Image (cartoon, rainbow, N blue to C red; front, side, top):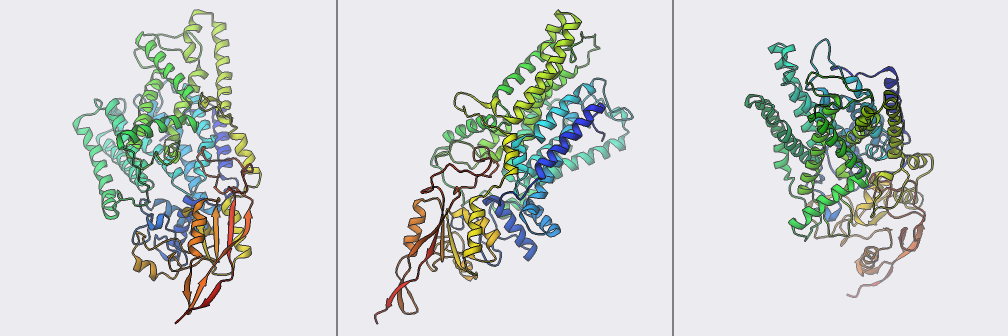
Length: 635
């Protein structure tokens, strides 16, 4: 394996981009508290290093939203494979338990994927024509240096990438495994390339194939144990893309290698799938919308939200399709596009560099479309609960691929590929002037894509947002969230082992991580829970709402569920032979928006704390149980 050839200035810029991405990713990783999905990973990881078990029961509190539907009978989160928990637990074991150490390994993994990106591009574009041996470069490969730079910058400096890899969650792992799986796939595919086989003897070829098919199987297995849904969608999409573009490039004997890798993958994943019945998800909401209506809606939402989250703006996608059409037309006409503004020279029938790039762009556009198709087909997302966007976290895995596609667009502008005919019809001086102008235009387009969402605006999305400047401002300023403020209140006002009830149901997990050692979070289940009641009652915790009464009720927003809960907890009951009635009074209104807006999805993310909200209905409200009124029970 060798690094892509870059000139000295290009290598210097590549290092600057990587260092900038590292700084932006690791700076103030503990700037905000974990939100609910992150806290699930961190809490289970902390329990793992303390007890050796992957469990939502940490010895004091149980995190089981949806009335226990999110956990199985052994208090393990359903549908959540163990890789992310193991990664976080390893970091906690090495560096201690904290917000920073919980997020650090995921940011590091995301940055590793960023470093792999130029290697992936090189293998995908140049692999079929680049020999293996003393000279691992074909003549036109240096023209791809700007493409490696643009792709690295578009990924490493993009806000959507930085927000996702800073999560104690599967986002960074999935994105990196997409890059590594795709890289290993091309390595495997190109082991059968005629340009490579003559340079290797039979034993070396077998060893080479064993190595890369083993890497491919390992990456696919790791992807499954990171996020099963995304791995299934991506591997199905990659398989479809392979048969569209490469089915005739391999013989039946060659496919035995891919079949062996698939068998290894199935042997490593099917027992886990069958044992935990991963297709059974009682925690997911039911959607009465028929499948033939829901699936097209999800498909449209996913395609639309690629533009919304700036991964692949529609304007750029249209320009990219134009480049592909122009490159193919010129290639068929026998006029290879000149990549540097000079008059084209005669060729010996080899594919030009732009033709190779255009071919790869078509392949990856199909890959993205196939991924979104299969994701929409198997996604558990619902469309009838007031949602207007897809689950953007499911699109985070494909960000490296879309960054490369946008990078190809900028590369075509930088190289002047689309304007070659103009250069040919005019003088050499005009051609050179056009070439340098294209560099400035490409750099300006890069800045626009990184700092604003201008390229994503259309008639239904008219809100202009700053991206990278807003991200930098967020890091510089304090960012209190609903969870940090609620945790601080409990530290200062609650007594040891006070019972706290939170609503909505998902809001208590971050508080379990941060203040679970001081208070107990109870009344989170009722008698209709999907968990075995005997096991629930055996836990030393006030979990059942019918049998316990909280000391504190924390309502994230003034919704009806909090009022209904306090009415239920104010019912008459008997304690020590006396009829007792509790009441709850407002203790404090926390001046913070009720929903955690530090989440990575751009539909939910707010750069800095939200201050323009209604304090009467959209804050966090803390209620305290007042001294009971009681009377003697009649005999």
